[in-house]
Amino acid sequence: MGGKALPWVDMRAFALRAVEMARSDLEAAHQYESVVFFDRGLIDAAIALEHSGGPSVRETLGQTRPYAEYVFVFPPWEELYTGDTERRHDFKAAVQEYHRINQALDDLGYRIKEMPLTTVSERADLIINECNAV
Image 1 (cartoon, one colour):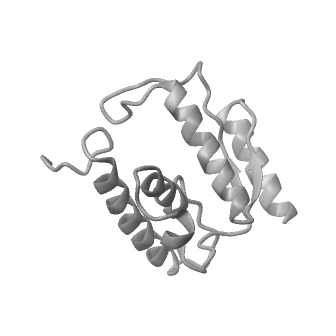
Image 2 (cartoon, one colour; image 1 turned 90 degrees about the vertical axis):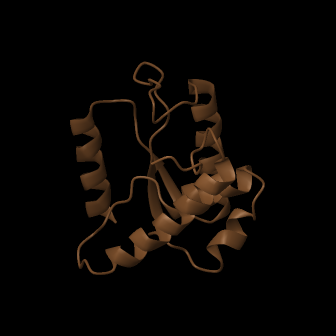
C-alpha cells in the first residue's frame, strides 16, 4: 500500500505494526469458546521489535502470558523454504529467527513442542493428539 512498515524497509515500524495487529487478534479471539490457534503472533512480533532495537520482549508483553502453556513450533525446512515478494530474507535468517523465537518462548516459561519435518496431514494429527493429551 506504499507504506514503509515492511521488514526490508523499516523493521522497527513493521514490528510495531505487527505488535498492534497481534494484540487486536488476541482480543478478537476472546469471542470464541473453542480453541484458537495462532500462526505467528504477539511473541513473534515482540521478538522482532526487540531485535530491531526496540524494547525487550518482556517489556512489550508486560506481566501477561498471552497464549496457552504449550506452543507448537515448526523448524525451518530448507527443502521447502522459498523466498518471494512477501518473504525476502534467506534461509539462514529464518534459522536465526527460529532460534530467537525458541529462546524467548523458553525464557517466558512456555512448553515447546517442536513439530517434525513431515507432511501437513501428519503434523495436524500430531497436534490434535497433543491437544487431546493436555
